[in-house]
Each structure stands twice: as structure tokens, then as C-alpha cells.
Length: 464
Image (cartoon, rainbow, N blue to C red; front, side, top):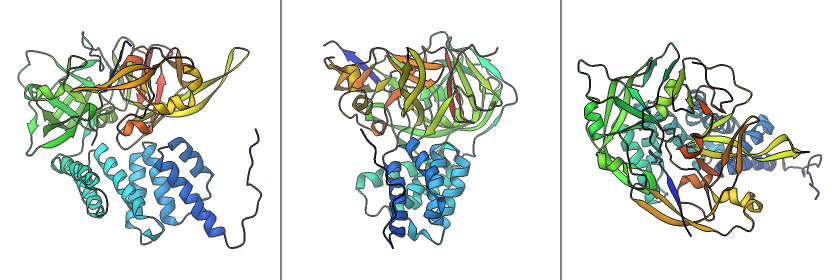
């Protein structure tokens, strides 16, 4: 289970289109055509092509799907769009349907896995534990490794079943300055814990959109007076490393004008959060549930954080955020279209992992396949793909003025970031890259709105 996603990559020296529309299907093949539509939808899901899946589902006549299929496919789309409560409602109906026969066992498993992810993100730990148990019981024929993954995930949420769901009291906007010495993995911000004694050092935490739960070092947990719980879990960190952590929770955590209640955390030895490639000691990482509770976060170029109690209507200059099983994804246009040197269109929207806790940005071999012309004539170099315990060498090209468009007026320029030639290990390989702090910190500022599921690059400074 991916809970931390710090990734460090350091470069070392070294026609005609034929259409079948209007053609009549052979007599008696209507059912076959309907089955084909369902199969095509599932193929897009399996390939993690959620943008195309959205388009395909929109174009599919709901009458061509059974009731359970409609619930399943629409529920999975809502999950990937981050509409978690609505997704849970539909996927729960799938599991309670008396007509499950129109769904394959693998689709039922996928619905269960999505429900487990939804409950974890919504901090419904008791429900998540039940869902993971149901999924584990169904996995009799899968590999031992897959069963172990589900078992570990079930154990993680079972240790938190007595922690109530996270709630927040947020009535007014606020701005927090960043700490004086921002980490390569993102700035830290002041937080406070209600109590009679003032700590000798200010309490600081960073935000990581790629962390499914919040992680604290042991020394930080002591300073924060974390309420510890029984048991230990094995967490998966950067570079495939694992470490032991103990569950706990904070009855109250104050961030600016926001007061959060029942913040679940996992606590591990300080050494487990030391990233030797970056020479960075992490102390407190607040993950996706905390960010979602805050709702709309704007990270300005000077590092300050602006949190808004309410979200405006969708900004036409924003782009869509998506959700995968373990990641927050950002939809970026990868190819500009010019006419007489004037930008007239943006095409080839692709999905990238948005990781505010990653120091580095990389592009995967999927990007390279579609943009080989960009690197024509360039000799491959060697990079090190690493995590807590070091890394392994990989062959890479180097970006030179590669634009990724978040919207018509916001562009993130890549210059010097690596492009993998071979597939990378891990689920990030399903997407076109990972956007980290080396690129995000150079933007004029950016807004992550987890209420509207949008991302926007600032055109002007956020109002003070």
C-alpha cells in the first residue's frame, strides 16, 4: 500500500479514418454489440485511461448496459473524478444488487477496492475494514502477493477502527507563512496542539497529496502529544522501502483558523523518515484526508499557504483533478497547436501524478513514446531513481523547454527534468509522469481545490 510517495531522481554526468457508423449489425448481434460496449469501457478502466473512459461512458447509451453495469461504470467514474460520496452510493448498490451476474468477479473486486479507498479517504475506518475483509475473502484464486497487499491494507485500517471520522471547523479564510527553511519536498507550515504547555520549538508540518494517511516521526509524535493506539503496521515508503509504524490520533489539530478533530496518524522511528539522497529529515506529513478537509489550498510562490473556507464556481482557467487508487492525478495538455506563431489550441490531454510531497518531476516512457521527435538526436544519459535507501540507475533523456499546460493561461515548463526510456517500477508507470516540487515551486503559485477537484496555476497573487 502506497502511503508516502517521495521520489528523487538525480541525473548523473555521463490518412483516412474509416467509421462503422451507419452500418447495420447482423441480425441477432444486438446483445453482442452491447457486450462489446461494456468490454471497451472496462478496457479503458484497466488501462487507467480515465479521460477517454469519461468520453466513452458519456457516448454510451445507458440502455445498452444492465442496471448493475450502469451503477458500476458510473460509480467508478465518480470515484476517479473524486466525487467520493456519490461514488460510494452507487458502488454500494452494485454490491447489494440481486443482478450481479452481469458483472464479472473481477469487476466486483474492483468495486470493493474502490469502496475501500473511498472509506479510507473519507476516514471511515470501520467501514473500510469491513470492505477490505470482504475483498480478502473473495481473493481465493489470486496470487499470494495480491492477497498480502489486501491483507496489509485491511490491517492498516483495522488499527484505526476506534478513531472517529475526521471533522473540521473552518469558517474563515486564512494565510500561513512557510517556515524559514523550506524542504526540497515542500514547505512546512506552523500548526498547534491545544494544551497548557508551549513547546520549545514551533510545531511544523508539510502537506503531501500523495500520502493516504498522515505520517509523524516518533519525536514529533511526542512533541505533539499524540494519543497512541495498539498495534503496528508495515507501511510502504519511497523506492519500495518498508518500515514499521504505530497508529495514533490527534483529538484536535489547529492549522491557521481551521480546527481539525480526530486526525489519524501513523508514527514511525525518526530514522525511517530520513531521506538520504536529499539529506532531508521529515517530521510531520499531513496527507490527503487533511488536505481534503481544508478543501481549497493555494500555495503561493513565496511558500505561503492560503486556505479558503468556501470554493468559488469552477475557474474556466483551471484543469481537472482525477483520483486513482493511490494517487491524485492532474490532467495536463501535452501538445500546443500554433497558427502564425499564435497559440490557438491545446491537445493531447494526459494524466500525471500530482505529488506535492515529491522533490522531483519525471516523465515516464509513455510520454516519450508520444514525443520521440522532441528528443531526436539527443544521447541518453543515466539517472538514479531513488528513495529512502538509495536507488537504482535508469536510462533517461533530459527535457529541454518542454511545456505542460494546466490551462490556456498556465504552463509549467520542464527544463532538465528526466524522461524515462524504460518503464519504471510501481503504479506511477500507469501515467505520463510525476509532477513534484522542483516544477511546482517555480510556478507563480497554484491552487488545489479538492471540493471542485480542480487545479489552477495562479495568474496573479492570491488576495491577502
